Length: 295
Image (cartoon, rainbow, N blue to C red; front, side):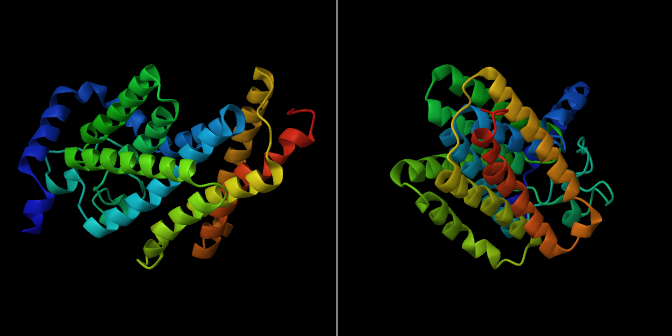
């Protein structure tokens, strides 16, 4: 009965059909959803915050990290296996999440429902479309979301229903977070979002705790910056470019430093995730108004 609910022959055959006729596009679609995907989204959000529009950066950032926790909670609750686990005719055309483990290890490669890439993309691009309410921006954002969703199906790592669920979850989060930021001021949106995530702490998943640390790094970083720093927008293109370049360099340094073996323990991993994003959001911007180089 569970298998009837979780797995559909129609969906499996659709994936096989897509892979058969579009196999030549594998290199392109593997890049759309590659291992650097999450880093690129984070950098994009940070650029919005540092150099474009702080409020937009806050809304997009909180939608993204809130979505990450919610999606992880649903994944370990539903426990749906990836398509290539179920049907041997479906190929896994993407590099596995954990290259050192078997691609058929559920623990290493994760669960299928919902599509995290799709929900993340929807939470980011949907927030941008909702913020600007511009027809052309909305169309571009929709195309990005569709491209991400289709790539997940083509690569054999998600069923179409995973992608559809990812879009629905992402959009629900977009409107929920947007409502909170328009309805409340100060710390209330962050506090309400955190309270919603508290049940996830008790699921005993290290992955969810890591995601919550991401969330706290963003949330407390935004609050700290808003309360104590409140940097101004760059006055020109050069200032914006400098903020972005040095911010990306700092991001790469932090990611690599905290990826060292000395941070292998669970506690240090949790702390390092929090610190990475708190530093980028709350500490790095201190330079913007304190030095002539950035202002």
